[in-house]
Image (cartoon, rainbow, N blue to C red; front, top):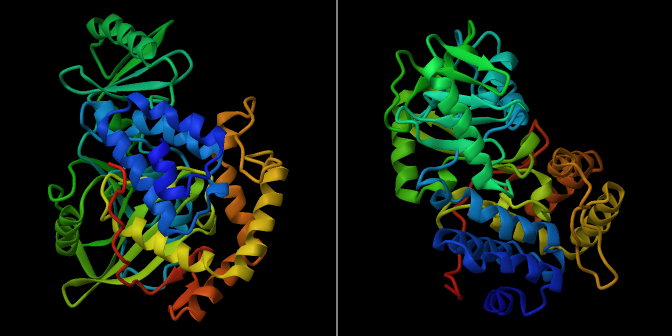
Length: 426
Protein backbone atom coordinates (compact mmCIF):
# COMPACT_ATOMS: atom_id res chain seq x y z
CA UNK A 1 0.00 0.00 0.00
CA UNK A 2 2.83 2.38 0.83
CA UNK A 3 4.52 1.66 -2.51
CA UNK A 4 1.28 2.40 -4.36
CA UNK A 5 0.92 5.63 -2.42
CA UNK A 6 4.45 6.70 -3.29
CA UNK A 7 4.45 5.58 -6.92
CA UNK A 8 1.05 6.91 -8.00
CA UNK A 9 -0.03 9.55 -5.46
CA UNK A 10 3.19 11.29 -4.32
CA UNK A 11 2.70 9.79 -0.85
CA UNK A 12 -0.33 12.05 -0.30
CA UNK A 13 -3.25 9.62 0.15
CA UNK A 14 -5.36 10.18 3.26
CA UNK A 15 -5.08 7.90 6.27
CA UNK A 16 -8.70 6.86 5.70
CA UNK A 17 -7.97 5.78 2.13
CA UNK A 18 -4.86 3.86 3.16
CA UNK A 19 -6.78 2.07 5.90
CA UNK A 20 -9.38 0.85 3.39
CA UNK A 21 -6.74 -0.21 0.86
CA UNK A 22 -5.00 -2.36 3.48
CA UNK A 23 -7.98 -4.70 3.19
CA UNK A 24 -6.14 -5.93 0.09
CA UNK A 25 -3.31 -7.33 2.21
CA UNK A 26 -4.47 -10.94 1.73
CA UNK A 27 -6.16 -10.45 -1.65
CA UNK A 28 -5.49 -12.81 -4.60
CA UNK A 29 -3.11 -11.78 -7.36
CA UNK A 30 -5.82 -10.78 -9.84
CA UNK A 31 -7.36 -8.42 -7.26
CA UNK A 32 -3.99 -6.79 -6.56
CA UNK A 33 -3.35 -6.41 -10.28
CA UNK A 34 -6.78 -4.83 -10.79
CA UNK A 35 -6.15 -2.33 -7.98
CA UNK A 36 -2.75 -1.45 -9.41
CA UNK A 37 -4.31 -0.97 -12.85
CA UNK A 38 -7.02 1.24 -11.36
CA UNK A 39 -4.39 3.51 -9.79
CA UNK A 40 -2.52 3.80 -13.09
CA UNK A 41 -5.76 4.73 -14.86
CA UNK A 42 -6.38 7.38 -12.19
CA UNK A 43 -2.90 8.74 -12.84
CA UNK A 44 -3.56 8.86 -16.59
CA UNK A 45 -6.86 10.66 -15.95
CA UNK A 46 -5.17 13.31 -13.81
CA UNK A 47 -7.00 12.40 -10.59
CA UNK A 48 -5.45 14.13 -7.58
CA UNK A 49 -4.72 12.30 -4.31
CA UNK A 50 -7.30 14.46 -2.54
CA UNK A 51 -9.97 13.27 -5.02
CA UNK A 52 -9.65 9.56 -4.19
CA UNK A 53 -12.46 9.20 -1.68
CA UNK A 54 -12.50 6.86 1.28
CA UNK A 55 -15.63 5.34 -0.28
CA UNK A 56 -13.80 4.55 -3.53
CA UNK A 57 -10.92 3.07 -1.54
CA UNK A 58 -13.42 0.90 0.33
CA UNK A 59 -14.80 -0.33 -2.99
CA UNK A 60 -11.28 -1.22 -4.09
CA UNK A 61 -10.34 -2.89 -0.81
CA UNK A 62 -13.60 -4.71 -0.17
CA UNK A 63 -15.35 -5.24 -3.52
CA UNK A 64 -12.46 -5.96 -5.88
CA UNK A 65 -11.44 -9.25 -4.20
CA UNK A 66 -15.11 -10.32 -4.40
CA UNK A 67 -15.66 -9.52 -8.08
CA UNK A 68 -12.53 -10.81 -9.80
CA UNK A 69 -12.75 -14.25 -11.48
CA UNK A 70 -10.68 -15.94 -8.77
CA UNK A 71 -13.55 -15.28 -6.35
CA UNK A 72 -15.93 -17.25 -8.61
CA UNK A 73 -13.86 -20.31 -9.54
CA UNK A 74 -12.27 -18.54 -12.49
CA UNK A 75 -15.51 -17.42 -14.15
CA UNK A 76 -16.87 -13.92 -14.71
CA UNK A 77 -19.69 -13.17 -12.25
CA UNK A 78 -22.91 -12.38 -14.18
CA UNK A 79 -23.58 -9.15 -12.29
CA UNK A 80 -26.75 -7.54 -13.62
CA UNK A 81 -29.24 -4.98 -12.40
CA UNK A 82 -32.40 -3.25 -13.53
CA UNK A 83 -31.90 0.06 -15.32
CA UNK A 84 -28.24 -0.47 -16.10
CA UNK A 85 -28.60 0.15 -19.86
CA UNK A 86 -31.51 2.59 -19.73
CA UNK A 87 -29.53 5.34 -21.44
CA UNK A 88 -28.13 2.95 -24.03
CA UNK A 89 -31.65 1.83 -24.90
CA UNK A 90 -32.40 5.49 -25.65
CA UNK A 91 -29.20 5.71 -27.65
CA UNK A 92 -30.31 2.84 -29.88
CA UNK A 93 -33.87 4.10 -30.20
CA UNK A 94 -32.74 7.53 -31.45
CA UNK A 95 -29.25 6.84 -32.80
CA UNK A 96 -27.94 8.87 -35.78
CA UNK A 97 -25.98 6.04 -37.39
CA UNK A 98 -28.48 3.33 -38.38
CA UNK A 99 -32.24 2.89 -38.87
CA UNK A 100 -33.54 -0.62 -39.63
CA UNK A 101 -35.38 -0.84 -42.93
CA UNK A 102 -37.65 -3.57 -41.55
CA UNK A 103 -38.21 -5.11 -38.13
CA UNK A 104 -35.04 -4.34 -36.18
CA UNK A 105 -33.00 -7.15 -34.64
CA UNK A 106 -31.14 -6.40 -31.40
CA UNK A 107 -28.69 -8.89 -29.84
CA UNK A 108 -27.62 -8.33 -26.22
CA UNK A 109 -24.44 -10.37 -25.67
CA UNK A 110 -23.46 -11.27 -22.12
CA UNK A 111 -26.83 -10.20 -20.77
CA UNK A 112 -26.36 -12.00 -17.43
CA UNK A 113 -29.03 -13.27 -15.09
CA UNK A 114 -31.70 -12.27 -14.34
CA UNK A 115 -31.83 -10.68 -17.81
CA UNK A 116 -33.17 -7.35 -16.53
CA UNK A 117 -31.45 -5.17 -19.10
CA UNK A 118 -32.54 -7.29 -22.06
CA UNK A 119 -36.12 -7.31 -20.79
CA UNK A 120 -36.05 -3.52 -20.55
CA UNK A 121 -34.65 -3.24 -24.07
CA UNK A 122 -37.52 -5.39 -25.39
CA UNK A 123 -39.97 -3.06 -23.65
CA UNK A 124 -38.28 0.10 -24.98
CA UNK A 125 -38.10 -1.33 -28.53
CA UNK A 126 -41.44 -3.14 -28.81
CA UNK A 127 -41.33 -3.39 -32.61
CA UNK A 128 -37.86 -4.98 -32.58
CA UNK A 129 -36.87 -8.61 -32.17
CA UNK A 130 -34.62 -8.68 -29.09
CA UNK A 131 -32.33 -11.63 -28.36
CA UNK A 132 -30.49 -11.99 -25.05
CA UNK A 133 -27.37 -14.15 -25.29
CA UNK A 134 -25.17 -15.45 -22.49
CA UNK A 135 -22.67 -18.33 -22.42
CA UNK A 136 -23.62 -19.49 -18.95
CA UNK A 137 -27.35 -19.28 -18.31
CA UNK A 138 -28.03 -21.27 -15.16
CA UNK A 139 -29.85 -24.58 -15.05
CA UNK A 140 -31.29 -23.89 -11.58
CA UNK A 141 -32.07 -20.77 -9.59
CA UNK A 142 -32.77 -20.80 -5.85
CA UNK A 143 -34.68 -18.00 -4.14
CA UNK A 144 -34.75 -17.38 -0.40
CA UNK A 145 -37.66 -15.87 1.51
CA UNK A 146 -36.32 -12.34 0.89
CA UNK A 147 -36.28 -12.89 -2.88
CA UNK A 148 -32.49 -13.02 -3.21
CA UNK A 149 -31.28 -15.65 -5.67
CA UNK A 150 -28.42 -18.07 -6.30
CA UNK A 151 -27.56 -19.65 -9.66
CA UNK A 152 -26.40 -23.26 -10.07
CA UNK A 153 -25.22 -25.13 -13.15
CA UNK A 154 -26.22 -28.58 -14.40
CA UNK A 155 -23.73 -30.18 -11.96
CA UNK A 156 -25.19 -28.20 -9.03
CA UNK A 157 -22.13 -25.96 -8.72
CA UNK A 158 -22.77 -22.44 -7.48
CA UNK A 159 -22.08 -19.92 -10.23
CA UNK A 160 -23.13 -16.72 -8.54
CA UNK A 161 -25.53 -15.39 -5.95
CA UNK A 162 -27.14 -12.00 -5.50
CA UNK A 163 -25.18 -9.75 -3.13
CA UNK A 164 -22.22 -12.09 -3.52
CA UNK A 165 -19.92 -9.23 -4.51
CA UNK A 166 -20.45 -7.30 -1.28
CA UNK A 167 -21.76 -9.86 1.21
CA UNK A 168 -19.78 -9.69 4.50
CA UNK A 169 -20.71 -13.30 5.40
CA UNK A 170 -20.33 -15.19 2.14
CA UNK A 171 -19.83 -18.65 3.65
CA UNK A 172 -23.08 -18.48 5.60
CA UNK A 173 -25.02 -17.18 2.58
CA UNK A 174 -23.70 -19.97 0.37
CA UNK A 175 -24.63 -22.54 3.02
CA UNK A 176 -28.19 -21.25 3.33
CA UNK A 177 -28.77 -21.25 -0.44
CA UNK A 178 -27.38 -24.76 -0.66
CA UNK A 179 -29.72 -25.94 2.07
CA UNK A 180 -32.70 -24.69 0.06
CA UNK A 181 -31.40 -26.41 -3.09
CA UNK A 182 -30.79 -29.73 -1.33
CA UNK A 183 -34.21 -29.62 0.32
CA UNK A 184 -36.23 -28.76 -2.78
CA UNK A 185 -34.43 -30.56 -5.59
CA UNK A 186 -35.79 -34.05 -4.69
CA UNK A 187 -39.31 -32.57 -4.84
CA UNK A 188 -38.85 -30.86 -8.22
CA UNK A 189 -41.04 -32.60 -10.80
CA UNK A 190 -41.94 -29.66 -13.04
CA UNK A 191 -40.45 -26.21 -13.61
CA UNK A 192 -40.46 -25.08 -9.98
CA UNK A 193 -41.20 -26.03 -6.40
CA UNK A 194 -41.80 -23.82 -3.37
CA UNK A 195 -42.01 -24.24 0.39
CA UNK A 196 -42.07 -21.88 3.37
CA UNK A 197 -38.28 -21.44 3.19
CA UNK A 198 -37.68 -20.73 -0.49
CA UNK A 199 -38.19 -21.61 -4.15
CA UNK A 200 -36.32 -23.64 -6.76
CA UNK A 201 -36.75 -23.00 -10.51
CA UNK A 202 -35.43 -25.19 -13.33
CA UNK A 203 -34.47 -23.58 -16.68
CA UNK A 204 -35.57 -20.12 -15.50
CA UNK A 205 -34.82 -18.31 -18.76
CA UNK A 206 -38.05 -19.47 -20.42
CA UNK A 207 -40.03 -17.57 -17.75
CA UNK A 208 -38.67 -14.26 -19.04
CA UNK A 209 -39.36 -14.67 -22.77
CA UNK A 210 -42.09 -12.58 -24.46
CA UNK A 211 -43.41 -11.99 -27.98
CA UNK A 212 -40.35 -9.92 -28.91
CA UNK A 213 -37.78 -11.32 -26.47
CA UNK A 214 -35.78 -14.54 -26.87
CA UNK A 215 -33.05 -15.85 -24.56
CA UNK A 216 -30.35 -18.06 -26.04
CA UNK A 217 -27.31 -19.81 -24.60
CA UNK A 218 -24.05 -18.87 -26.29
CA UNK A 219 -21.31 -16.31 -26.34
CA UNK A 220 -18.99 -14.32 -28.55
CA UNK A 221 -17.90 -16.49 -31.44
CA UNK A 222 -20.53 -19.13 -30.59
CA UNK A 223 -23.87 -17.48 -31.23
CA UNK A 224 -25.08 -17.32 -34.83
CA UNK A 225 -28.19 -15.46 -35.99
CA UNK A 226 -30.74 -16.85 -38.42
CA UNK A 227 -31.22 -13.33 -39.85
CA UNK A 228 -29.10 -10.21 -40.14
CA UNK A 229 -28.65 -8.14 -36.96
CA UNK A 230 -29.08 -4.37 -36.68
CA UNK A 231 -27.55 -3.75 -33.25
CA UNK A 232 -25.23 -5.81 -31.06
CA UNK A 233 -24.75 -4.59 -27.50
CA UNK A 234 -21.77 -6.03 -25.66
CA UNK A 235 -21.50 -4.13 -22.39
CA UNK A 236 -19.43 -5.05 -19.34
CA UNK A 237 -17.78 -7.93 -21.19
CA UNK A 238 -14.58 -6.70 -22.87
CA UNK A 239 -13.27 -5.33 -19.57
CA UNK A 240 -12.56 -8.95 -18.57
CA UNK A 241 -10.58 -9.81 -21.71
CA UNK A 242 -7.48 -8.67 -23.60
CA UNK A 243 -7.25 -6.87 -26.94
CA UNK A 244 -6.77 -10.00 -29.09
CA UNK A 245 -10.06 -11.31 -27.71
CA UNK A 246 -11.66 -7.98 -28.63
CA UNK A 247 -10.35 -8.23 -32.19
CA UNK A 248 -11.85 -11.70 -32.55
CA UNK A 249 -15.14 -10.41 -31.13
CA UNK A 250 -15.25 -7.55 -33.63
CA UNK A 251 -14.63 -9.97 -36.49
CA UNK A 252 -17.49 -12.15 -35.23
CA UNK A 253 -19.81 -9.15 -34.91
CA UNK A 254 -19.00 -8.14 -38.48
CA UNK A 255 -20.37 -11.45 -39.76
CA UNK A 256 -23.69 -10.94 -37.93
CA UNK A 257 -24.42 -7.28 -38.63
CA UNK A 258 -26.40 -6.01 -41.58
CA UNK A 259 -24.86 -3.21 -43.68
CA UNK A 260 -24.96 -0.10 -41.51
CA UNK A 261 -25.58 -2.12 -38.34
CA UNK A 262 -24.07 -1.07 -35.03
CA UNK A 263 -21.92 -2.61 -32.31
CA UNK A 264 -22.03 -0.86 -28.92
CA UNK A 265 -19.34 -2.03 -26.51
CA UNK A 266 -17.93 -0.73 -23.27
CA UNK A 267 -18.87 -0.57 -19.60
CA UNK A 268 -21.23 1.19 -17.24
CA UNK A 269 -22.85 0.88 -13.82
CA UNK A 270 -26.21 1.41 -12.12
CA UNK A 271 -28.62 3.65 -14.09
CA UNK A 272 -25.99 3.91 -16.86
CA UNK A 273 -23.60 5.83 -14.61
CA UNK A 274 -19.83 5.66 -15.21
CA UNK A 275 -20.62 4.94 -18.88
CA UNK A 276 -17.82 4.65 -21.43
CA UNK A 277 -18.49 3.01 -24.77
CA UNK A 278 -17.49 2.81 -28.42
CA UNK A 279 -19.99 2.69 -31.27
CA UNK A 280 -18.95 0.85 -34.44
CA UNK A 281 -20.86 0.86 -37.75
CA UNK A 282 -20.59 -1.82 -40.43
CA UNK A 283 -19.42 -0.15 -43.62
CA UNK A 284 -18.07 -2.04 -46.66
CA UNK A 285 -17.93 -5.31 -44.69
CA UNK A 286 -15.83 -3.90 -41.87
CA UNK A 287 -16.53 -2.23 -38.53
CA UNK A 288 -15.72 1.48 -38.50
CA UNK A 289 -15.48 3.27 -35.11
CA UNK A 290 -17.89 6.21 -35.27
CA UNK A 291 -18.06 7.46 -31.69
CA UNK A 292 -16.48 7.12 -28.28
CA UNK A 293 -18.59 8.54 -25.45
CA UNK A 294 -18.49 8.84 -21.67
CA UNK A 295 -20.80 10.17 -18.98
CA UNK A 296 -19.71 13.35 -17.23
CA UNK A 297 -19.42 11.69 -13.80
CA UNK A 298 -16.25 10.01 -15.09
CA UNK A 299 -14.43 13.33 -14.80
CA UNK A 300 -14.18 12.79 -11.03
CA UNK A 301 -15.87 9.50 -10.15
CA UNK A 302 -16.74 8.23 -6.72
CA UNK A 303 -17.43 4.69 -7.98
CA UNK A 304 -15.00 1.92 -8.81
CA UNK A 305 -16.54 1.19 -12.23
CA UNK A 306 -14.48 3.64 -14.38
CA UNK A 307 -11.28 1.99 -13.19
CA UNK A 308 -12.34 -1.66 -13.45
CA UNK A 309 -10.59 -3.94 -15.95
CA UNK A 310 -8.54 -7.12 -15.97
CA UNK A 311 -6.09 -6.05 -18.69
CA UNK A 312 -4.02 -2.96 -19.39
CA UNK A 313 -5.13 -2.79 -23.04
CA UNK A 314 -8.90 -2.33 -22.55
CA UNK A 315 -9.74 0.30 -25.16
CA UNK A 316 -12.67 1.96 -23.37
CA UNK A 317 -10.71 2.32 -20.12
CA UNK A 318 -7.77 3.85 -21.97
CA UNK A 319 -9.94 6.14 -24.09
CA UNK A 320 -11.85 7.29 -21.03
CA UNK A 321 -8.72 8.00 -18.99
CA UNK A 322 -7.09 9.87 -21.88
CA UNK A 323 -10.17 12.01 -22.61
CA UNK A 324 -10.82 12.73 -18.93
CA UNK A 325 -7.16 13.66 -18.47
CA UNK A 326 -7.48 16.16 -21.31
CA UNK A 327 -10.60 17.69 -19.77
CA UNK A 328 -9.12 17.84 -16.26
CA UNK A 329 -5.99 19.57 -17.57
CA UNK A 330 -8.09 22.65 -18.36
CA UNK A 331 -7.68 24.61 -15.11
CA UNK A 332 -10.67 27.00 -15.45
CA UNK A 333 -13.02 24.12 -16.29
CA UNK A 334 -11.68 21.95 -13.49
CA UNK A 335 -12.05 24.73 -10.94
CA UNK A 336 -15.74 25.19 -11.80
CA UNK A 337 -16.35 21.44 -12.03
CA UNK A 338 -14.73 20.66 -8.68
CA UNK A 339 -16.60 23.41 -6.90
CA UNK A 340 -19.95 22.16 -8.18
CA UNK A 341 -19.12 18.50 -7.57
CA UNK A 342 -18.20 19.25 -3.97
CA UNK A 343 -21.45 21.14 -3.47
CA UNK A 344 -23.52 18.29 -4.97
CA UNK A 345 -21.74 15.68 -2.85
CA UNK A 346 -22.46 17.75 0.25
CA UNK A 347 -26.15 17.90 -0.70
CA UNK A 348 -26.20 14.12 -1.17
CA UNK A 349 -24.24 13.63 2.08
CA UNK A 350 -21.89 11.45 0.03
CA UNK A 351 -18.07 11.58 0.36
CA UNK A 352 -17.96 15.17 1.66
CA UNK A 353 -14.54 16.84 1.93
CA UNK A 354 -12.99 17.00 5.37
CA UNK A 355 -11.07 19.89 6.87
CA UNK A 356 -7.85 18.60 5.28
CA UNK A 357 -9.37 18.69 1.80
CA UNK A 358 -9.86 14.93 1.32
CA UNK A 359 -13.04 13.25 0.09
CA UNK A 360 -14.66 11.07 2.75
CA UNK A 361 -16.87 8.00 2.98
CA UNK A 362 -20.54 7.23 2.47
CA UNK A 363 -22.62 7.49 5.67
CA UNK A 364 -22.81 4.15 7.44
CA UNK A 365 -26.61 4.36 7.60
CA UNK A 366 -27.11 5.25 3.91
CA UNK A 367 -29.08 2.46 2.18
CA UNK A 368 -26.99 0.60 -0.38
CA UNK A 369 -29.47 1.45 -3.15
CA UNK A 370 -29.23 5.19 -2.43
CA UNK A 371 -25.46 5.02 -2.30
CA UNK A 372 -25.27 3.16 -5.60
CA UNK A 373 -27.40 5.75 -7.41
CA UNK A 374 -25.38 8.79 -6.41
CA UNK A 375 -23.25 8.73 -9.57
CA UNK A 376 -26.26 8.80 -11.91
CA UNK A 377 -27.77 11.66 -9.89
CA UNK A 378 -24.50 13.58 -10.17
CA UNK A 379 -24.31 12.96 -13.92
CA UNK A 380 -27.86 14.26 -14.48
CA UNK A 381 -27.22 17.44 -12.47
CA UNK A 382 -23.91 18.14 -14.18
CA UNK A 383 -25.39 17.71 -17.65
CA UNK A 384 -28.38 19.91 -16.81
CA UNK A 385 -26.00 22.60 -15.58
CA UNK A 386 -23.96 22.63 -18.79
CA UNK A 387 -20.83 20.73 -17.77
CA UNK A 388 -21.15 18.22 -20.62
CA UNK A 389 -21.18 21.10 -23.10
CA UNK A 390 -18.20 22.69 -21.33
CA UNK A 391 -16.25 19.42 -21.45
CA UNK A 392 -17.01 19.19 -25.17
CA UNK A 393 -15.62 22.71 -25.65
CA UNK A 394 -12.44 21.75 -23.80
CA UNK A 395 -11.94 18.73 -26.04
CA UNK A 396 -12.56 20.81 -29.17
CA UNK A 397 -9.96 23.35 -28.06
CA UNK A 398 -7.52 20.45 -27.63
CA UNK A 399 -8.11 19.45 -31.26
CA UNK A 400 -10.66 16.67 -30.79
CA UNK A 401 -13.82 16.36 -32.90
CA UNK A 402 -16.29 16.30 -29.99
CA UNK A 403 -20.00 16.83 -29.37
CA UNK A 404 -22.74 16.22 -26.79
CA UNK A 405 -24.54 13.15 -28.07
CA UNK A 406 -28.30 12.67 -28.04
CA UNK A 407 -28.32 10.94 -24.61
CA UNK A 408 -26.27 13.62 -22.84
CA UNK A 409 -22.81 12.06 -22.93
CA UNK A 410 -19.52 13.62 -23.96
CA UNK A 411 -18.84 12.13 -27.40
CA UNK A 412 -15.95 12.34 -29.83
CA UNK A 413 -14.54 10.79 -32.94
CA UNK A 414 -12.49 7.80 -31.73
CA UNK A 415 -8.71 8.05 -31.75
CA UNK A 416 -6.19 5.50 -30.54
CA UNK A 417 -5.32 6.38 -26.93
CA UNK A 418 -1.78 6.07 -25.56
CA UNK A 419 -0.97 2.81 -23.76
CA UNK A 420 -1.19 2.55 -20.01
CA UNK A 421 2.03 3.15 -18.13
CA UNK A 422 3.46 -0.18 -16.87
CA UNK A 423 3.13 -0.96 -13.20
CA UNK A 424 5.69 0.63 -10.91
CA UNK A 425 4.79 -1.67 -8.01
CA UNK A 426 3.77 -5.20 -9.08
